[in-house]
Image 1 (tube, rainbow, N blue to C red):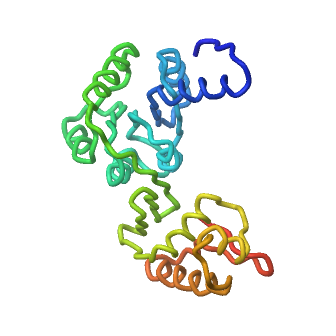
Image 2 (cartoon, helix red, strand yellow):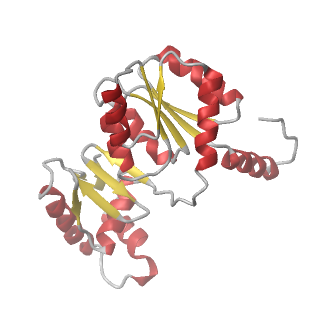
Length: 244
């Protein structure tokens, strides 16, 4: 990034604009040496680079809305095919598999999982960069960027205001989703009932903070019908916090 000499907030605004204009690429591979090489290459090529060393980290990085993803197949915890399938349910950016597998059946499985291309290791960095550029050029359609977060078996799509647990939709009312959105986007922070009521109901509220207890009960009942995990934790005498 070029040096910008301006004063005060102007520097911040210019830097933010430059970061916004940069294409975002997510690199996923359990081999740190390969990640390091690709990261240096794409950063020097002007990309904003995010990295993940396993499938779980890859799912967490999706909230940054990458423009393209380079994804290894053979990884610990969650393999690349499964990660690709889960990502494809929520975003449409190009996904390129990086793998040492060369069997036709592996390629077919990759494409069926939702991949757009297949790059065999070892690869030439300049060729990889050219493939990435080609896919981004073809990505000329205006796609809606979904803001998505993964919490174990739960997926929250904040753009669609939709929550799925193990592929089943948890149907929440508007205020129930607003409460979940508040807690889940401030993970680890404890909110008392009064604070939740003020933030969710605002000026339109004409009830009391006791309403929060009823809404929390309803949310927990809907979640427990689909999962044994307790996503909303009660901190006795204080309030509630998200337990993703």
